Amino acid sequence: MTIFNIVAILITLSAVFSYINHRFVKLPTSIGLMLISLCLSMALLGLGKLGFADIQQQAQLLIGEVDFNVTLMHGMLSFLLFAGALHVNLNDLARQKWVIAMLATVGVIASTFIIGLSSWWLLKLLGFELPFIYCLLFGALISPTDPIAVLGMLKTANAPKSLETKIAGESLFNDGVGVVVFIVLLNIASSGHGVDAGHIALLFMEEAVGGVVFGLVLGGTAFWMLRSVDDYQVEILITLALVMGGYALALAIHTSGPIAMVVAGLLIGNHGRLLAMSNETREHIDTFWMLIDEVLNTVLFVLIGLELLILSYTGPVFVASLLMIPLVLLARFVCVSVPIKIMQLRREFTPKVIRILTWGGLRGGISVALALSIPQGPQRDLILPITYAIVVFSILIQGTTISKLIPSENQEV
Image 1 (cartoon, one colour):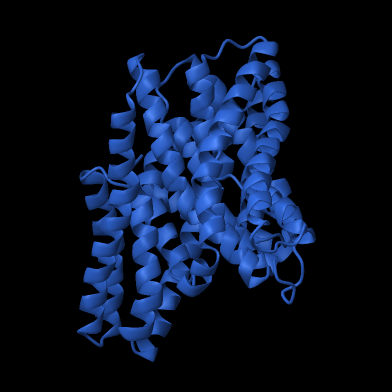
Image 2 (cartoon, rainbow, N blue to C red):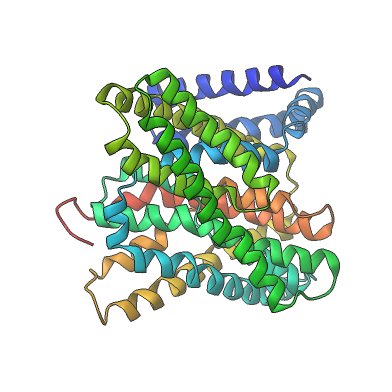
């Protein structure tokens, strides 16, 4: 099947599911689309059990031709992160910088080891022999909150500005740290020997620090170009080139494309919006990137739901997946509450902030994509379905109930 046909089918499904959700289901768009996609996947699997194996096999072939890891990590992610960062206020972000920095670095690393140790113990208890390094690998891919899922949730949650900044800021930055930790652990797991501290430090510098610097260079260059013209068509093309060309170049020079996109998006969305764009350009760029964001989010959550077709769940794996959900939530609670309690010595937080940050730390497509990047083998066959179950729970259950915990806008958190 050609790429055009695959894209045509996914866009058509996304449009139909969006219509059904808007008219009948009436859930937040990302949650509704994923729920409908899951229902379609289960229906197709059910048809296969009833003797309509050809229909099931055709659907599985279609989804099998979509490399989810490449599609998200080397394609959609650049657009979605830039679009998300474009509307984050730098002044608001600066006011919450220590909270965000703690959660996005120490929190992710601590969560990786807590989940790694806990999952190793739990899986061994259930009869699974998953090497400890792969348990840490699972901890690394499931610890970062997903910026795409989180930003989608915040659009409908009506959260206070300070709380929205904490959640959005953490999710935009912690995936870069999570990916670095994941890459280091994957190198250890694949090579069978350790990686020295110098190599880890160099990798972190290349990925995280390099991503920040490269994002500033990209954003600064685009800012200079935007400031020198006043034609919204040209300026939209400049932002599009920034995202596509910048992300491709970041991958080529082995630095963090996601972090570079976030930094560039913050620069263009703040200084660029204020100093380099006319009112007409601002309006057109906002509309353009809002549509890009909505369309890609729609396709992404449909894809996540359809991934069920190519996963294999046995009884023991399903039980392990269910038990892992509270374990991951507990690790999130610990890694949120400890930094918050320490920072409460110097600043005020409302008691609800720990519960909200814990329950609002959604996992999404990035975790599934990282799980799919693990080499084929029994380790991936166990980690992937567990990861998928946690992501589905996170989006469908946490995503639909988080608004009940969030205080009204006039309450500061």
